[in-house]
Amino acid sequence: MNAERTAPSNGSGATPSAASSKVAVVTGAGSGIGRSVALELLAAGWTVALAGRRTETLEETAALAAAESGARDDAAVCVRTDVSHPEDVAALFSRVATDFGRLDLLFNNAGTFGPGGVPVEELPYDAWRHVVDTNLNGAFLCAQAAFRQMKEQTPQGGRIINNGSISAHAPRPNSVAYTATKHALTGLTKSLSLDGRPYRIAVGQIDIGNAATDMTERMQSGILQANGELASEPVMDVTDVARTVRHMAELPLEANVQFATVLATNMPYVGRG
Image (cartoon, rainbow, N blue to C red; front, side, top):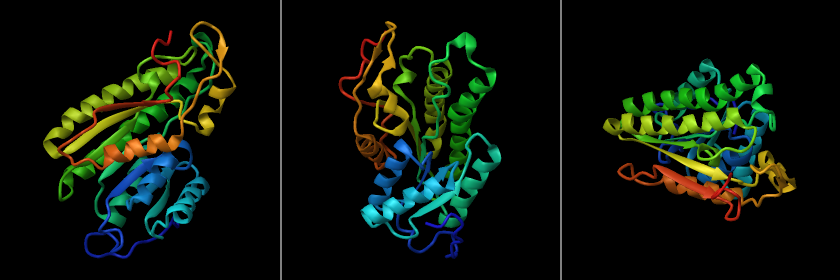
């Protein structure tokens, strides 16, 4: 679980212990949904490259995997990555190719809400740009790098799962940057899914509503609704999301969950607005 581990070569670049397991990249793996999905995959025997902006939180994820599920010492590799920086993304996927020799799954999860509750006319351009660079440009850069590797590797193919949102369907008040990027992510998913067909690359999207993480704590204390009122919203256990992602990930490449919506049962989504 060393962020700078150098793997011995077996000719293909994969370590002997990793060679028999499937290999995933999880972005935003240092907290929340990304951490939960990484832990779920590691518990199931996957090898996972944990990507995120802070090495210390990635190492916490790796330590949790070892403590909670007995994951192999070499099953989790921490790679500090800002997905909005092309050079960081290139280094991440180069590391995966060198250490493991192939890539079976990208969970494109890194994202940010941006400044909450800011009316569109007051949203600074820098804030808009930060959300777009992380949620959309970062997802594209990671998908592009994964696509290249999956197309060229033997056996050919793999799977990309994009983390969309309920906001890919219906917005919250004062969320223009986040909502725009999540709608755009749906278009990215559809286009990649079509372009991946000749190369056995399956691409799907999971749209999540109110998973209990640090980012959604405000849901329970009261959040602005479409009618102008503040209301507490129910949340669900984030591990329920992780299990859904694992199900999508472990399907044969001949089958694909194109879109899945997983949400707290009583959240105000159906009929929002």
